Length: 217
Image (cartoon, rainbow, N blue to C red):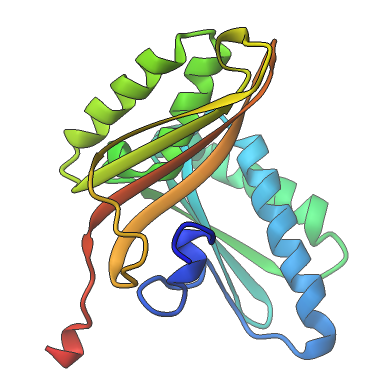
């Protein structure tokens, strides 16, 4: 089971919370869910150079709060908050132009970028698109993540590696990755590097230790 499902969805509601927090009646649920997906995609495209690790969305009746976790918060905020205000206008015009909704944006800095799977994947994809040797990239990633104080890391790259005629996959790991242990805090992300030889898929698992319910201790 642990090898076949997304490690985050496998633990959702147990040790991991939902990234979207809101309530909707049945006839509005699909619309709001689609809106959330498109909004996150829009933000990641607009802020592609800001090292976005995670986006959370909270909704009340007339207020939408977007929490952006970034390794480069200054790039998102801009001079005197101009970047945030511009972002609010773009979101309002694209998604909520016909409704009276207040949009709030909060920017949070990622404490340890080297231990965040999403940021690691983004870095690997950038290196592969620069035609760096994939084995060197994988080894450098393992070394950087090790220094972040985690207990295990695994990286998988698949595709036409180094321009090979037949697609192949390479895996490199350090430490332990207990995918079947539900209380294990495993950060997972995947991405795609668009190279001249085709698409190369990247997957990263980072094990940060176990999470226990303090109320039961």
